[in-house]
Length: 150
Image (cartoon, rainbow, N blue to C red; front, side):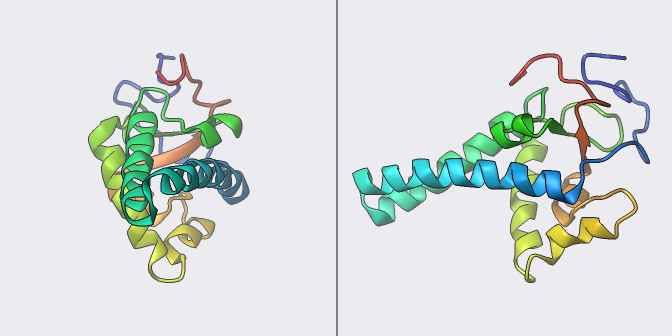
């Protein structure tokens, strides 16, 4: 097993263990509450308009840095013992695909969150943003993290 967990180094990780909808939801709530709290403080300091722009930029940087790191974990994912990995090789997704995954979240949200619920009946438990970025969200028990944030 490599530093990125089972499946790293080019082997396919299709049909392995996946993070459940509930675990992913709790991780997203942890990140959301944390980012919202920081954003509200920023808006109080900078005003609503500029604060909103800064809040969006910080949220984007947070996701790109942490999900794009070798660990593939935000604070919420770390708390819930899950991580984002490349669907084809099991390794980290890097900042570019983390950014693509973030943009994909917008697509997952627009039609009444259908892109998030998609994982409930998808054979690989992928949301639309997972499919767009070719990623999987997996338990760290099956795909260990060597160091956080990596």
